[in-house]
Amino acid sequence: MIFFVIGIYLNIGNEDGGNPLLDGNKGVNPNEHLNEKSTTSEKGRVAKATEGLAVTIGKNAEEIEAEFGEPDRIDLSAYGYEWWIYKKDYSNYIQLAVEDGKVVSAYGIGEKVNVAPFKIGQSLDAIYSSLYIEPTVDIEVDDSSYRFELSEEDMNMRPLIKLGNIHVQLYLDKFTGTVSSIRFLNDSVLLKQQPYELTYHGKLPSVEPLSKEDMEKVEDGNEQQIFDITNIMRNRFDLKPLEWEGPTSAVAYLHSREMTDASEGTHVSEAKGDLEKRLDAGHVKYKAAGENIAAHYVDAAAVMEGWLNSKGHRDTMLNEEFTGLGVGVYNKYYTQNFIKK
Image (tube, rainbow, N blue to C red; front, top):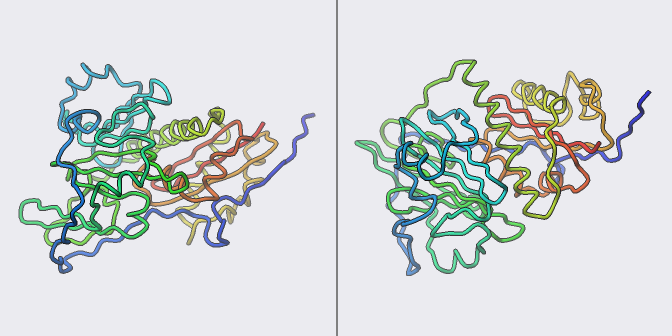
């Protein structure tokens, strides 16, 4: 007979005593008045990129394969494009979003990825001292006008910068004061994802609803991306990588699915109980366990950066005691279950 005990049980993401669910939802205000554009300061602007990941936007799939080779994996997204995953190693991890044969977005987190004119690990002081970053970004498409409005939190953790004819999301690590990862995207992807408060006149771009089968593929892809990016983030802080835990992932998936019916996110399932009871029911053997949950983030990369910037979630993800990780994604509900064997 095998005996096991819980060495620690973490109430993840609840460092302030409030709702443990990290919520990435942003509002949309249709047909509101668009104010005049913000005045600029004397600080510089980034005109355009001439190298690196940014210049992949607009390239066709044949050019990408010639430059990077075949992707290690192709994941379906919820926004009409496929993620081409290149995961050679932790230092060179990138995701390229391919739609209708062309790259429409690119995400880089590996420390050796060329994200010019920025750098992974670059200090925020260097960025803010040389660039003027506006709290609003305006887009004109045909007869429609759109304005993304960034909150103070957005400006501090994921500012949006115009770079020639594309946009840059800088995901910032507020605890180290450095750039954690970068996403480049065109107007279309930005309008589909709507990651910031949006005001608009005209027609709002829509995303085609997915079949149940395709949605399951999106969820599988998000789970794998969360697993990959978790280990990249742990490697950044000289922590050992986690092993994929199948049975633990099944427990995490069931919790994400149940969260869709809950009025607010919680670590205690109304039907299955707390993490300890849920892992026991899933026949998971462990000595310690912890959990991160979130909802409404646009995708895996976004939720990972959200967890990184929340102390309770961050402490769990970067806990050196954990050896395994199970990830469960249902729709836009996300669960990480960490265990120590």
